[in-house]
Image (cartoon, helix red, strand yellow):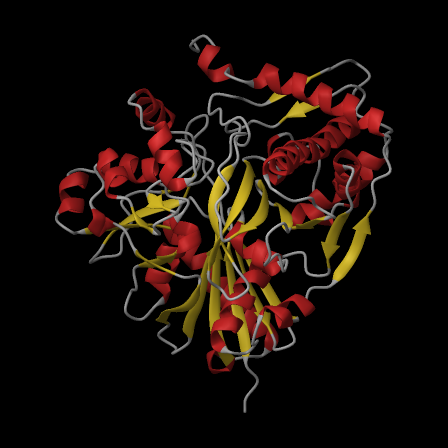
Length: 498
């Protein structure tokens, strides 16, 4: 029998990655193609929908070439994706109505405020586990329909389709243009009842979204369609739920944190949803059999994007890798505190009008201090999320598993362990989002028989032990919370620009 691989496609905010996994769970080839983001107005973030597909296809081609493999060597494809980013397109031509509106985008904040004033907040949270916020897909769909000539009528006539990035990729990658999604991505739309596991008619009515616009929903592991080359797509999952699965967090009480463009902390809560009163999200996740379960989530909107800003916006670094040495070159931040609310604040504040804030600036602060403050900001935001989750989840946590590009930074991970007062565990495979997509597809293909087999393939690369005194930790967190208060409601309170 020919060598069989699992191809994991991880379409993220910064780029599309393709990783080939073999039957031992090892990565045999990987490729990545960058994807650009545009910021046409303050707080707006969008991408070219075609580029998302093209970058994914190119990454897959490069990965296969690196391994010397053909499509006939691929047993299954698993897709993971940036979750709330939304596309609406023409059913016949496949042409998008406009840009893909990225999850970070705040352009629909006025509509969200209007829905809150209309009394929808409690109803939405009860059904979906989410607050009304521009982060989620529903108001992005509404915006695209409203800014397209005859958009609403075309949607009602069945001419248009909508979906998050997984659905858009599936439609483009399958021979028969399947229009489907999985439970984890559907649970990020603000339109899906996570208890009944169906589209909610009342919430569709809230935004006047025709049901025919939305994809079919199914479990994350299973047949979603087949490519023109005859390869089955056997898994789809939102990137953070895929990472939770890839980290082997199949049981209630296990948690992971992913450091990407944003940063996301998820704790598996098992078969029962846990409602939050501390600004966390209740969302659908995936158990060890590939079936839906629940998780509590804290969502940071800007994490790795801060390092991108240091590089591309300020030009004070050339690569992300050099930030570790710069941070270690100074003893502290010289009093600098950076709140990276570039597109508002997510959990636990949910303030779309918050803006980035740099405090404590004196002549003693230099380039290395600012870099250190940027890295520390990622850890501060994570610490707030974990405190909220542990206050609500009926369990304790022995260690936090971490992944994503930012987890490669040893300074950040040690500072993270210090702030949490908990060990931080980094696996040998940092890109566990792709690993989760591969594990799900391999589970559905029968390459791996059960969760125990998958769990055994998780390997620890380094464990960071906390070394900071509790008094120092408390001081730092108190200063961070003071800085957060300065950033809240900034765009709301600021006078109009000239």
